[in-house]
Image (cartoon, rainbow, N blue to C red; front, top):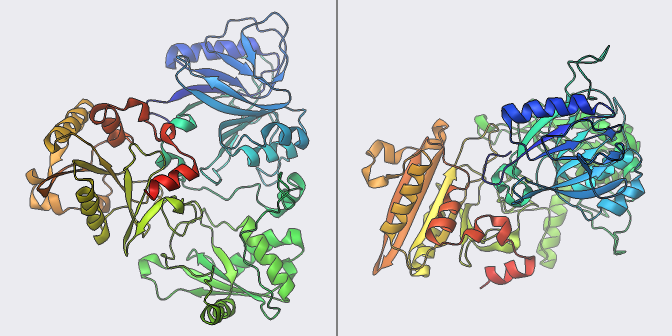
Length: 577
């Protein structure tokens, strides 16, 4: 999760209680052998006297060590709050939310409602639902996890070390880690094998790479807090009014046709059969007393797809329209998860035909149909059919690619060229068409670059080409600068003209090799193009933007995209310029 220029190294400890000496000795040894660390975060109850000077800046939020000890600092706030934890050099900081053992759901709503997206959430107690109820937990902690959407959630109080599979949130996954109590080596009966100290390297959110943030590790699941049984207890107001008094809009389809009793389920994995689907549905619908309302489940193999991409879909029949409508709302809200794959739910073909007739008769547009590929990832930032895609940034859509303005543009004319299909490479016709058109329109030297790195989870990466005009620069000068910086970082950029025909025609993503491609266009009369590539090297995530910001455009203050982020109105104005 870290490793870049903005990385912070942090230690997190479980319930310290009065065992400060054992804690500080262990932290001191780690600081000497593996340091430096930026901070020590105490996740759990703290008491007693701190006898030793901590070698790492330490912070706590639950309890009160004895007066007169200035070796640890209490995070600002009462039983819940948000703290900024700085790096040792003060150049960056982590956004950390916390919930102490005495917090109520009302305390959490008061303190954390506006604290969306944090690096860490620390809670003394486990959150309700995080482990499917096996160890129970607190409603306040579950509410906090849903409100602040942390990248990491650390909890104590159970005296056990446990890591949950990552789960999905709106912008990135969350990793839940439970830590045991701190014990000294001489404590009789101590659970010496239970881990109570954890280390994390992380780039704080303003500096984190978006590709890293949106990646889903293998085994990622749905959020444990979206299940109806959990939502009804921990989030009783979720279906009521917003703070401004306006009614929340629901994403699910609605229908007033009482003859509809069948739902269509799309995107099922090949191994799901009728029994497995029925069991998964009933787990979600049981809380609404709708499990027995399912009359039949029919799973169908999709014979139209290529065998290598085989999948299934299903029809689920309900006894009544009311049951089907309530089930659709619940399933679209909570979702069903099969090893990280989430099928879609909508009214069956009868609903589609009804909508089609309405479109023909009235000229209205149906919200259930889409001209975008049916394999678009629901949470991909670049899939046009995804709810996560910022479509107000899209400037032009072709048959196989589209042009958009990126979040946090380096310069005003910074553009992205993205394949419409979710794919790991940009090898589609419209990418080159758009690339040449942009370079011609700029009328100056234009840089385009693309970086691909194989992922541990197949299908995560959606290719995109960054296009940036660089005024008053020559193509040769830009190429020399990129090659010089590449050499400093331990890899080469080779001119495409110097590659063998086999190398030039190879598709590195097919063999699982990473690559970086740089195209430099120059318009001095005719448009010329110079290309350099690296195949198989370890090219840093930020290499292209780093070189442009620091060494070509000399705009180091625009190095990170978060530092250049605009509000929606400004983005729209710049996109339509």
